[in-house]
Image 1 (spheres, rainbow, N blue to C red):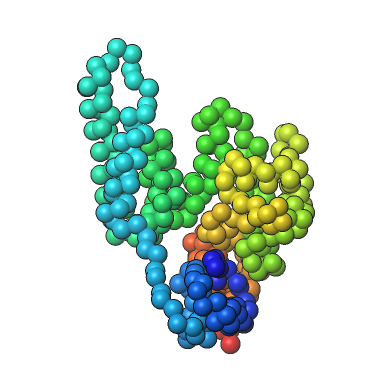
Image 2: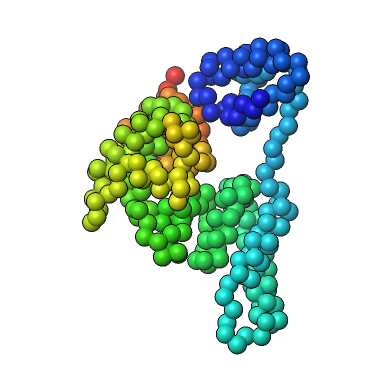
Amino acid sequence: MLLDGLDEISNTEERKEVCRWIDGAWSGFSKARFVVTSRATGYRKEEGIELDADHERADVQDFTPQQQERFLRSWFTAAFLGEPREEGADDVEWERKQRADAEERTTTMIAHLNEEKNKGLRQLAAIPMMLQIMAILWKDRDYILENRLKLYEASLDYLLEFRDKRRNIKPLLSAPHARQVLAPVSLWMQATLEKDEAPRAEMLTAMQTWLDTLNTRATPPDAALFCDFLVKRAGLLVESGGKEYLFRHKSFREYLAGVQLKEDRPYEQLQTLVTHFGEDWWTEPLRFFIASVDAGVFDAFMEKLFNSP
């Protein structure tokens, strides 16, 4: 029995109830194994969120620095050796040069990630998909990202637009226009739904509302077509059984929600953020919000935080 994502239950009392349900269900199956997954922040004994049943805990580890280097060396080597050969080039010399270029990119990127100022990027590089996007941007644009905010921005640009443009495929919407829809929808999921899954009909309605506000030369796609693109082309969304949509990687929704908090009258959002300060569900959106606002908004947030009960 695989129960995936205990941490995605945003309500603490509901999470406790689910733990009690697991304990009860497990006791009735003497030969069955139960596997429960959760981010570390979603399983807290001090808050009463724990399993009483006898169990073993296993922590899924991030890529180690050594594994990151191995991944990058393999990826860059495959990418450079997969490029078209120059006409008339000596095969042995061409391969030597490509391998040397791959090694140079690998060592430069590893050195960049190891710099103390890039600690945030180094943590994200432990996630295979994010590490691959970083490698793609470094290879194609000669650009090494400076912080996690820029990494998410560049990753969305790549997934929403530039990947298709490289293949001479016209994107459904430009990346900026797509984000104008995805950001408010992400904040709606964060603040109103308070969960990672959105019922299909509600998601389409929310998407359509924002698609209708876009000022584009061509008529924007309808919500169903846009969601289909996000699932099948961009790979940002997953459709679950035709009933729900969710972001393939939760952190993309949290990033977009945080940015929307900044774009949508940030001073008016401060009370909401202070009210939810310290809650797991709001930790990442708050971090992205703080990383994107100016000093005035940050100071106002800190003042309201320290003056709150």
